[in-house]
Amino acid sequence: MLDPAGVDLPAPHDHQATTTERGSFCTARCSCGWYGPARRARSLAREDAAAHLHRTAAVEGTANFRSPSA
Ligand SMILES: [Zn+2]
Image (tube, rainbow, N blue to C red):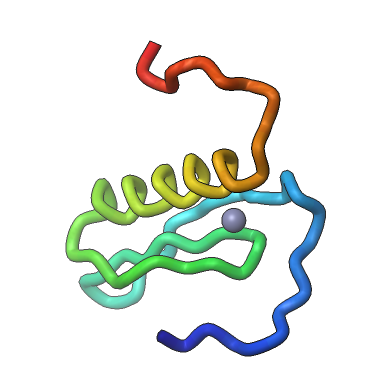
């Protein structure tokens, strides 16, 4: 929604997701510049972060093709 245009992506594997609390909401953020929607529960923000990390790993085509739910 508020994605700034022309963001230079850092190193492919530079994804360090954290959660930031603002008021009663919690937002997942990543070192790559990504951030998720505001959540009322930190657990949901963490799920957003996990989904982002999983998604980026898939997009970047890591050599690990095993099921993540192993
Ligand atoms: Zn990221």
